[in-house]
Image (cartoon, rainbow, N blue to C red; front, side, top):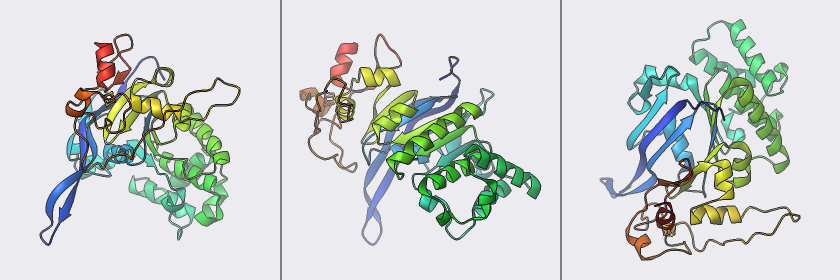
Length: 336
Ligand code: SF4
């Protein structure tokens, strides 16, 4: 991560609630609070990892930050590079079109991300046409350049997606996201559909490309080893909320939140290293429709006390490391 930190995204109190409707008149009877009052910063050139169990809201957060899903509330301020922040939740069609040139998404499933009925050439040409690259020669030059970056031969453009392996398809998806020269990539579980042997190749390639193009990544994954390898800072989410944010080293060496501690204890360690005690999380993740009161983790937390059930802990910084924030009453007491 660069020393001079330039803010590129400032997410403020973001909410994405999905209404639950019932009956003939589709009355709203409740909400799935997928993202619930999330605030975070993303700095230029860094990889911000977002981690948590399935259903914690990490993918919805990524999609809402790109306006693939409209937020229920809050703001997503984006810096166009001149220090001029604009709230993308208020963008009109033209502004959104320009924004999408700068921020692209790489999805989990390379099998469905490429249209199986279209040659790669067509799938690659479409975004360039949409973004106003009208000369065919220029489009082809841009396509060749990104394919070279992901180590795929340009003549493969005339093939169909099924002619590629999973790893090649994900490399193609990365190349397509890069062709209009974005500044930010939001990567939603980009390697989880791939064989473990291929994952490392794709992750290394992403790291090389990031360095070469000075890209900023929002890297969403459930696999803590993958997030550790890729990220500079890490956000841990539970039931739509951030429970901990820290630099990678601080989070992995000194996890403060009991949920983070349990997640980290489940990562396998090589046998030659000291053994670590695994903390087994009891119970299922509660429903985001009916979240537990107070600290949403209290139904599974081995350290809960009486205050945990009635009062929601705030996300507060550590006194010695202001970049390490945690939302837990135990931690808050220590930090205070
Ligand atoms: Fe556990 Fe209480 Fe901390 Fe929540 S606030 S993580 S229940 S100790």
